[in-house]
Image 1: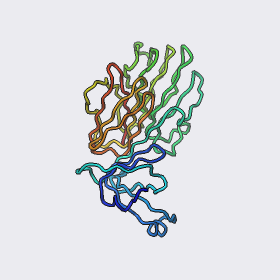
Image 2 (image 1 turned 30 degrees about the horizontal axis):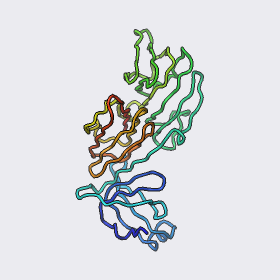
Image 3 (image 1 turned 90 degrees about the horizontal axis):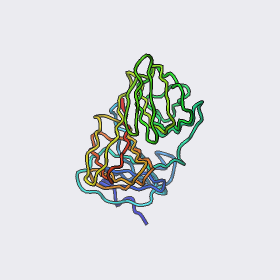
Image 4 (image 1 turned 60 degrees about the vertical axis):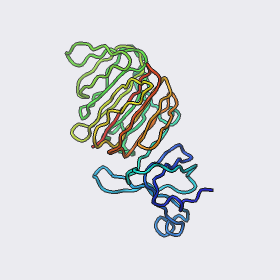
Length: 273
């Protein structure tokens, strides 16, 4: 039996039954306190976070949600780190004229791609037609790379650009863009003037290497389609199975590093405001 009170004020790693992981300094709330504050008579742990405006916020996790708790070493910051594992079955796939698109992450979480009210979006598309035209997205900057097959993109009157797997192209979503080639791709969209970020394809090696994280990012998605990889936080190591996605929130200012079998590539998309 887990005694949450034993972890009050301690640096811990809480693993939830859902697969989510919280790391940082935990604060214990008794069942009586939770009943009066939140209307639920159950013990809980709180983890401090920093919201997009730099203000303090919390994550609240209930005792019934927790699978196990592991102590961390000294020195973890008060602000928590949230990690969430997901596989293809956890995402929604929709059809468009040239194939299908699977949305991995959108921000704000309640945003709707169809009405263009999002600040960033990370997705993957299966392009089934040999030729197609990209949807015009004049309010967004875009990053794209094929992960299976290749694609040739022609933007406006520009020269065609051949993209092989893990070649990344950044371009303006307002550009008329014509695509040739059947492939599966990986995409990041960022709202102009309101969000920043980047996409990388990191070559994995047996040695841990730091991820190229930008200061102040909010969301990070890691995906290695072909191999298991290991993520190292300042206090622990986590194995992510091949093809699974790892979504990390509230990263600042934590260094993260990865390792895995060469020549596999780790896709990395990050965004913030």
